[in-house]
Amino acid sequence: MLSTLGTGAAVASLLLAGSASPTSAPFGEEPPDGKITITVATVNGSGCRPGSAAVAVAPDNTAFTVTYSEYLAQAGKGSKPTDSRKNCQIALDVHVPQGFTYAIARADYRGYASLAAGAKALEQAGYYFQGQQETTRSSHKFTGPAEGNWQTSDETDIDSLVYAPCGEERYFNINTELRVDASGADPQTTSFMAMDSTDGSINTLYHFSWKQCPGHRR
Image (tube, rainbow, N blue to C red; front, side, top):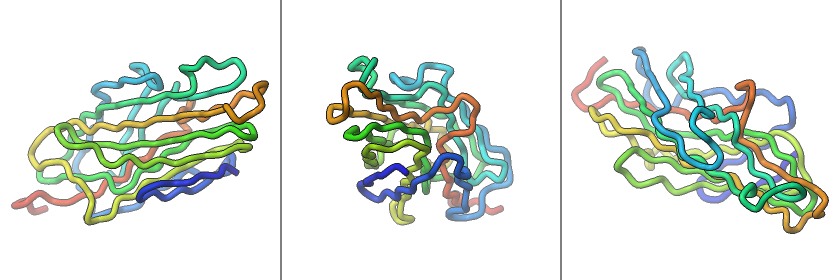
């Protein structure tokens, strides 16, 4: 089991290999019935070259997932110095039914890690709507020895939710980072932390909080 320390308004939960995926839960008002489309506008960073990130909306419009295919940081034997820190900034083009707006109430980040004794790792993330300030980054620290699936969850208090401006199209930007420090581990070992999946079974889950724009009725 992986050990982790969270900062800020973060909730950390730990998974053993083979544990079930997190499920979406409703936040805020009932989600709209209309179609929601999300496409990847741009991706930048050492952890996500173009084409290595995919997005999908939950059938009930309560959440969406982002799946990475090449997001891994590692340190130790056989690693280059640049391998120890990977980051990704992804801009999503989100279209929601007219008269509704959304915030992100909770984000669940998942992956797999193998940390030798004495090794440390860090996962951190923040997000923002185009033209607005980034949310305070939530970070989670992991310590070895450990090997298995990991999950961290960052939840925002209802009074602190930041909603997309009604009637405006703004990209939703997600910034994530993985770091591995093997300076305290046996130099003959290799440690890594991944937030990727080759078959789509591991993804990050973003839970919507919906509300109606002023003057709109269902």
